[in-house]
Image (cartoon, rainbow, N blue to C red; front, side, top):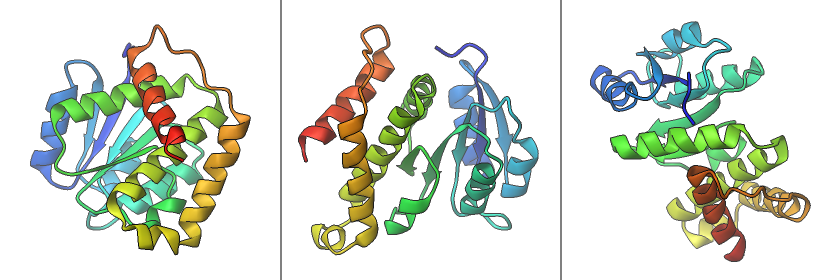
Length: 191
């Protein structure tokens, strides 16, 4: 499923960025940016996936993410960061959120999931984004924090609306999409 996939790795810690690139470069074309400024300079229509750190000096990962969204660029964006997620992620335009440290296997798996999602229609992609945010928040915040959050309730309501409207694709021939759909189904059943 890789083909000529281009992954932009963005992290201000050179060693971390280089290790991510090493983990992915055998299967993908990898571009490394060591700052938000470099990330924006390297961002072009051929970039399929961005692995983005949040906390960087100068232009932060959050600002890079906002710029990607404002350009109406369509790479899948995965936040790979030491910043524990909070309700601030609800409005952020990323596809998945990983908390460091991450393994090479986790990086390869998330890239494959992002590639699988790119083939889906917009509503199904949105459903995956919402499911990822819900799962991230539910794993990191207390039940009390979730129950008192208007942002969380709005996110859950949007997810439930899409769940009622969207027909999920058949993924028999794509193990990554099949695994992603299994995770989504598990989330649906937990509601």
